[in-house]
Amino acid sequence: MAAAALDTVALVDPSTYEGGPPFELLRRLRTETPVTWVEEPALHGQPAGPGFWLVLRHADVERVLRDPATFSSWLGATQIRDAADLDWVRRMMLNTDPPDHSRLRRLLTRSFTPRAVAALTASIEATAERLVDRMVDGAAAGRCDFAKDVAADLPLLTLADVLGVPAEDRWLMFDWSNRVIGWQDPDYATSAAFDGTGGTPMAREAVALRPAPGPDGRMPDPRTRAGMPDLYAYARLLAEEKRRSPGADVMSILLAQVDEGGGRVSDAEFENMFWLFAVAGNETLRNGLPGGLIALLQHPEAPAALRADPSLLPGAVEEMLRWWTPVMVFRRTATTDVDLAGVRIRAGDKVVVSFTSANRDESVFADPDAFDIRRAPNPHLTFGHGPHFCLGAQLARVQMRALFAALLRRTSALEPDGPPALLRSNFQRGVKRLPIRWTAA
Image 1 (tube, rainbow, N blue to C red):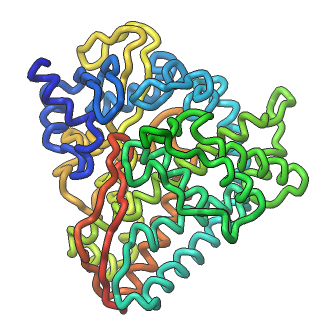
Image 2 (cartoon, rainbow, N blue to C red; image 1 turned 90 degrees about the vertical axis):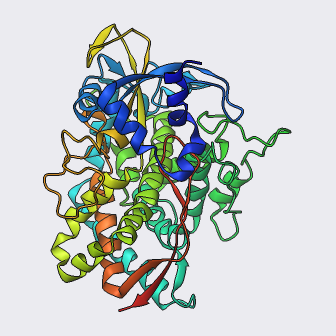
Image 3 (cartoon, rainbow, N blue to C red; image 1 turned 180 degrees about the vertical axis):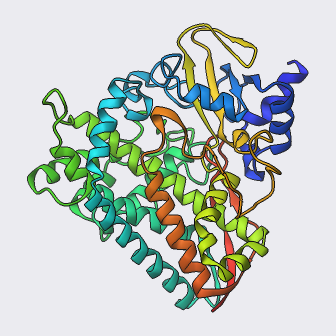
């Protein structure tokens, strides 16, 4: 293997990220070869792949994301590794191109009515207060695992409101997210924290279909339909219930929508949208919240400034999102031969954009490795760019502002109580454990 290829193995090896992203390597590549070829050797039981072009500069990442005709989400889907069940994953909105993507996005956007968003915002703020009160007033003597005990619950409860999932079933989404996003991490790949006890009949029916590890100890690929039979069964049962008895939640509104051609969201489309919300909508924020707290813990002058001037919090949240960058990469596939930053990319090549690198591009962000809650402007790409810009960005910001406002108000000091444990993944910058201690205000 050539020296350059050996150099970039760290970028695809998921175990690299248990120690954090290789920022110095990304910086050097961004300077020297901003569109660089990365080999995909066999690693951790996964077969070798064909390799891909990694796009590292902010402007080039924006160019790729705003041009779906040249850089397709549908052709090879959006995960770095080639999908085992490409026909199925192509049906997910995440893996579609216009005009199919535009139709589904319009239906979803119309479902987030001002009334629904206002109700969700009020619920988020009340939930954040309750979670922090539970943390501070609990019997844990000033200590907790912020990642599991606090940060995990807020997006689950919010998504339960969005999806119309009964709150007692919400930890199903915790397991589903672990299995999908953490499939490279042995701690998460077999996640089964929810056993159905206390859940609805729908939840118990779904849990009965949960797959088990095979003789080799590995779970079926969760990025396939066959790998998530419990999730899809729950989605089908939920859709049937909402068609019988619609609620005020976004998914009930979505199922009642009629598109320009007079059609409605199909069962398969609903199941895949449910997958997208329950997994992607949960995991990004679940890691963004502890990632934001890690930023505050490492920069104690920041929480002091926020307590002194709470009006700085919206800008601080944007900087947390940039500095941590929960989703590190996304893939596209070239539909035609194209030049990008002086590199000739061939039709069919995998093209992977690095949000982690783009969010630290020196040509866009002064002193990019610094955490600066007053950074302005802050054109980070954490929520993507172009037609696939994250639909949940507004709700994610509301959740982060609400939780950190409550946390800073109820505490006078926050400190680490041990090192964080990070996810083994080259896709999600995940936080499995974040032990902290605090002094109540």
